[in-house]
Length: 258
Image (cartoon, rainbow, N blue to C red; front, side):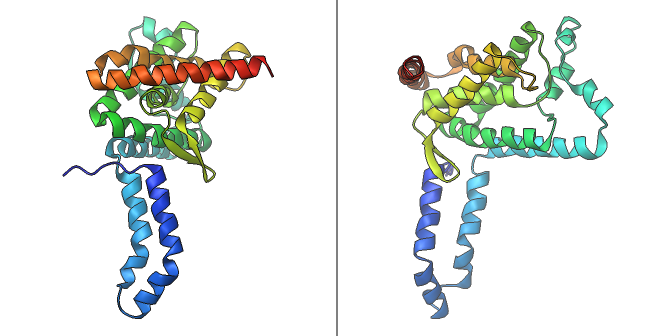
């Protein structure tokens, strides 16, 4: 039987209950009514939670391994050979575009991308399954690269692919709760925060070395990739689109009347 991908809210609730019941559990262990191994259950729960979405976990592991290879085996000059540049498309040289999706400029760059991949990748994998999740991930990576190239922007990083997962997640499950510094927050708020930052980065450009156009291309990719979904999932997207439209109008109204 296929194991369900546990939500962050359910996982957190289990850990809170374990902590609340810990004194009783310790008494049972001391009286011999529970085995000592029961105290390690949160560790086992954490491992299951982190690895339950196998496709998402695999992508994260690959990105981490590639980054380790970057640090120890690839010079900065060599790294530039694997980075995406717009002119490569005219030369029909697509290899750097593909390799750039797994490269990161720093540990902070990697950590930020992997955190968003973990949150939004799990949602898409949970709701649509691993195959469609991969299609959306790599489809968004391709579309975001071409979109960025239209504006003369290249670079490295998985964020274009992750942007596609963000827009998909807030469409199919906008009120899925994640946790930021222990505070529960629906992903529609987290997703739109990222989108607004990128729109701001395009309208008010600064020298921040962030691929805002690539991100926007990833967000927009779902408008193409949605045609790959089945009837039931398309209906979810339609409902999610209405919810997101209302949310976006509310944000715009709040901004204009501020």
